[in-house]
Length: 155
Image 1 (cartoon, one colour):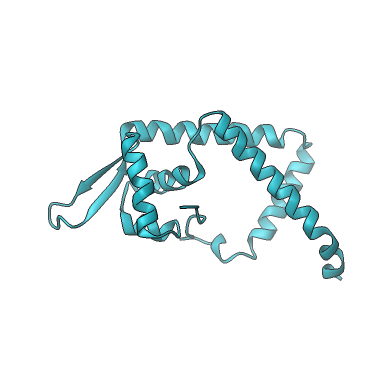
Image 2: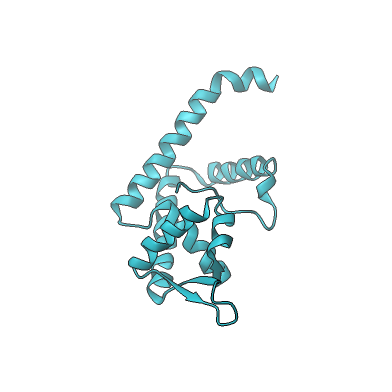
């Protein structure tokens, strides 16, 4: 029963999701916000305090080379710092700089405001229904639990 209802609507649902995500990221770009890759990496650092490059690569499901390139760009922008461990100089820890802390805070604020704007056409009951439906759908994903990896980002 569900498949007969779902199949003719999958393409439309996919198109609507793509349109929403594209509009969301276009607006963030217009605001001069962090890219999705930068945001994901910096959120990991904001939560963890510091990580090794390999930890970041694993959490973001990207290669170490891809993570290194992203970190290089963030270091040049003065948003993250690298520091070698005294005990083992081969180990490099990455952390947010003070400017990075401010930037991730601003990016989170921009995303919340933009999401509120995108959801503003919904009545309160519709918003509650949407949240309930997202929560129900999220139960089907193995990443929904504690210790979930960050979403995969483009390198």
